[in-house]
Length: 159
Image (cartoon, rainbow, N blue to C red; front, side, top):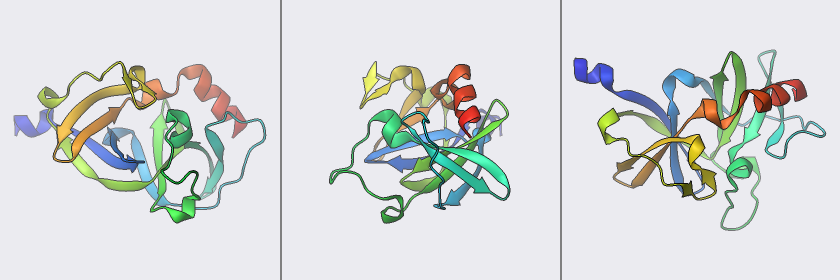
């Protein structure tokens, strides 16, 4: 039982060819793709806002943020098996676009390795760690570091 308590639970998802994970405690919900309203003069990675049951949520495209390109160029959201993961960051809710939700996994902290300095356009400051799995690697994102407080405030003002 003590071993289960030390496990970290991650919601895993695909962006491009890579598998990423975020701490399940940061995830409010996962929703299917819905219409997004664009916002003028927003940061390049903020695609717009979503009205989710009366709550306005800024939507972030991690493909843009991490400079992930598709093999055949840009694809429309509805062409992918995509959706949004709604996450809580310091009391604010943000939606991140994903290609496909994978599953919830448990990770033993002893299996987490330090990330390389640069990983496919993602700075190591955004990566909590890397875990080997049967398909290669699971990249654990540090959601709090992904959006520093100034940036988070700018995103929330745009919404």
